[in-house]
Length: 126
Length: 126
DNA sequence: ACCTCACGGTCTGAAAATTAGACCAAGTAT
DNA sequence: ATACTTGGTCTAATTTTCAGACCGTGAGGT
Image 1 (cartoon, rainbow over the protein chains, first blue to last red):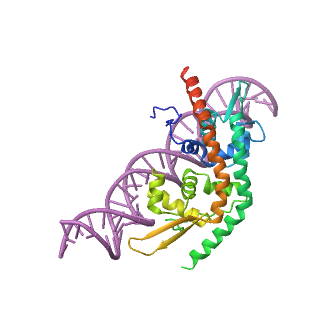
Image 2 (cartoon, rainbow over the protein chains, first blue to last red):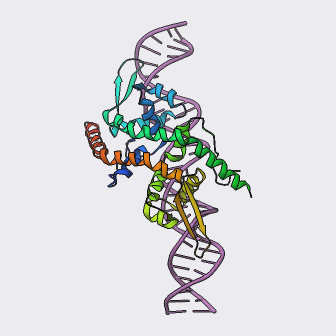
Image 3 (cartoon, rainbow over the protein chains, first blue to last red):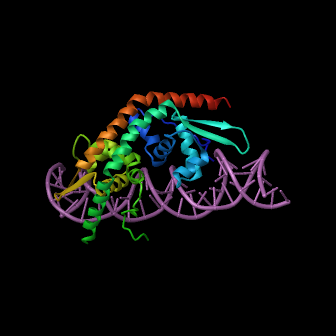
């Protein structure tokens, strides 16, 4: 019995980073944006692409991304229905800093794994 | 009745981005890293800095960040105890792509707010 | 002597987010 | 008839997060 039909509270954060992080600072958003980078995809294609996201979270996160202007949703009223998701110019502009992040991840992944191993070794010295 | 005392499962994701995103792709990690960018901070200083994080999440997230090699934790066994958190070289190297992201957020925050307003206007056309 | 405060957490029970999986409509293929 | 497809939504169970109580130790106030 929520009064808000599924469109969250929409608090205006005075701090831009917080505001952006609230929406973007989660696994699924980043992953969806990355999946959409090469081009338009339909709902189920995104599901397959991301593979361990639930329908609900995909649906929800897509809605948020659409609301915030990162993607567009186009419904072709065929049967069965076809729905295509595409990055907007804003969404594409976001890709740039994001690719930096992905590149960083690629480069430093090994360091993280190494740090974890070290940490675990230390812990195991009872 | 978890066997792991509070140190999560440590799955080795074959995909570096996923692996990094699992830890970094959440509000608190990013916010903590940003808070530590200017320099070392103690636990309660971080609390004040971030302001709406709970002790538990701060503690947990710091532990993860330490484990993954982004920060170091130094305990000075005084009374009351003093614990300092500092970025490692790995952590500092992460700052670079992250600043890009923050800059993007600053630049495009207005676009997002505008998109939301547009979206809401459309929704209200019943 | 006694009370209170500070610090850096941990623990608990309640609240919120996420998950898996059932379900839906309507047309097409078998 | 039956089964399958798409893009979701709904529900119940699980997991995560939260707010707030609690902890020990020593210093400082009264």
